[in-house]
Image 1 (spheres, rainbow, N blue to C red):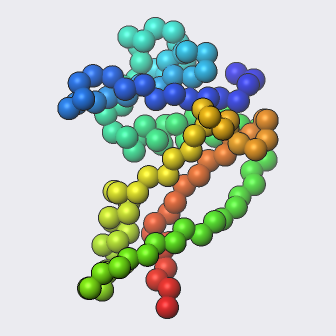
Image 2: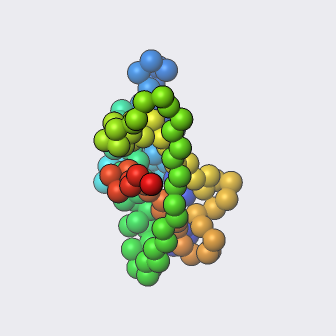
Length: 130
């Protein structure tokens, strides 16, 4: 696929037992090994974290021949509380509660025509400010 890969997550199943499949910009479905047009062969995801890992891997593979440029941006967390928060409890809470969303559909894969921007937060590297 020479064009930048654009992924869509498609919900399937009952809202109480939601599952997901992946599609690309050609309306092909991810089987776990390759893309096809037969939805019955789709890899079904029940774990959103695993789905995210697969999306990230597919996007990286689609741009494997491109140089990598890395940037770091601060994320500020402010807690207003009568009790002192434990940083490990906060990390665990953030890993479960916080989500970083990139609107690739609206904004494209990045500021360059031939690249893809991948963003992640490593909550384990969080430091308490004085």
